[in-house]
Length: 341
Ligand SMILES: *Cc1c(COP(=O)(O)O)cnc(C)c1O
Image (cartoon, rainbow, N blue to C red; front, side, top):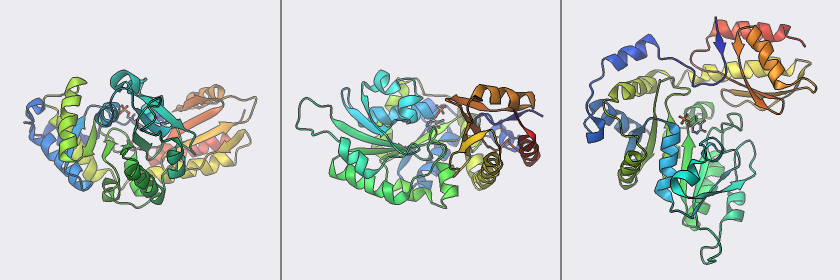
């Protein structure tokens, strides 16, 4: 039994998901003739109360497309210092869109309307870049799966309206936030110009993200996806996995969240653990006591057949997911209780 808690991207499609994929009707999606992709895009758009949606091979490409949609070279996007779009997309903002990132020192990856207001540039001052876009993450990745308070998002939206800025949501793990906070996708559809959501994380499909917006924006996104090389042919097999995931794998995220909290509760009792960060969804981040370091702890877990992620500076990340079953969870809890250095 190998237990992989490195990420929620390590899941493999279940037999039932594979069956749904195998039975999909497909066509050439570059000509918009794949019926399963067309259906999937429509379902996702409607779920968020938006006009249109577009299927992407990755969350990175969906986010990078959003940056391109809302900016021109020389402009800036306002985002948290730990944002995936800044930190984990290989400098794509500069590479693809020629823009800079105005970083905000947020709390667990989350920024406030007040912080956004402070950094918006005066468009009449020709020395400064144009602020064009605010991008936020929900849940936060490097921030440990933290969820925004929707009231704060409404305030940021108001600041965007007052300053003529677009508002993008990197919702790679929005599904987790919806479950943890008992929210509806339409509450986010109302607030954002564009939203990207991943299907290959908590929802367990092998590939795929979707970008959601109004018709005109998504028509422009189609051209940008083409430029980025993201036009796919008979990709309806992948969309079928997405439809299956929407029907079967959302409510069960509750289990992932429960297990993450149980892991955190045990970790808090261990003498070699310094601090366990707040756990709201499926990500657990904890630090170990000096002189012990994260790599030593990772090695010890590995000896026990458990893969985890040492993220540096004495910190470790565990992510629960669809393929992390109850028997594995019980083994990990037991192993943790006995673990010493
Ligand atoms: C995983 C993730 C993405 C997209 O990553 P891909 O590997 O390109 O699918 C985007 N944003 C956040 C916050 C993520 O966690």
